[in-house]
Length: 261
Image 1: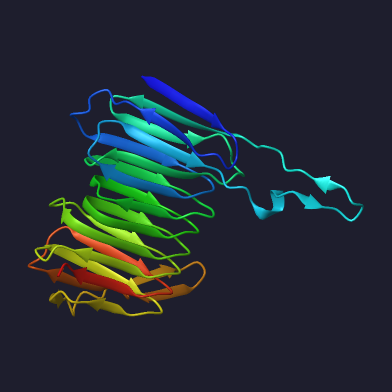
Image 2: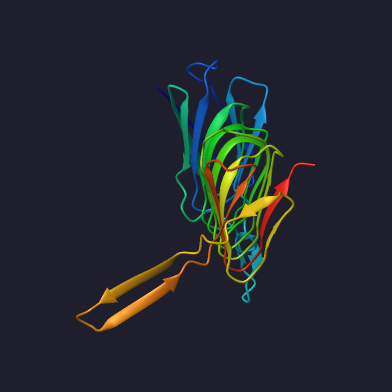
């Protein structure tokens, strides 16, 4: 097991290189941030290269007080820790309240598990693997990726462009306030489960929509005398004869299923 870290001063970009146990095998990268953005780029290399920067907020800039005194911001450093064992790399930071932006280069065959919560987006490009992506208050954008993705955010869009997908693997894409916009290869075979509460569902695929799929669920609480009937508002269909389930859901936004042109 390799554990590596660096301690950096604010506004200074620092770089950490993490060698892999076996560069010939697939990589698994796990990144967990509280505040900040994560950018992961696939490249033709054998190591994982991490660039980190913690921007100084306007509140911490030197400013003059009413009595003529000046407040000088301190150099709040931060530590990035990367632990590698058997090609599994875990990346974390010691600062909870400080924004840290990470740009990470990985070999093109890598499975990603990325999570951030505040004040940051997640961007992935040119990586093939099985990916789990989670954000709360930022966008998820993935370009020229292959494999499978499970992605969820709350307050932004999900935009994903696949070059290829893993056969027979279910996927899910959900947000609350934003669009779910995913582009698939034209030969996609899938059973789709789609829902937009206050938007539209749009596609340029020929989807065989199941008109009979709406399910009605009845529940009863005899002690309280409460009886419910709930109608399923999902849209179900098949693309190219059907396959693994792909679920796409938003409340305030549109669902877009695009075909590679």
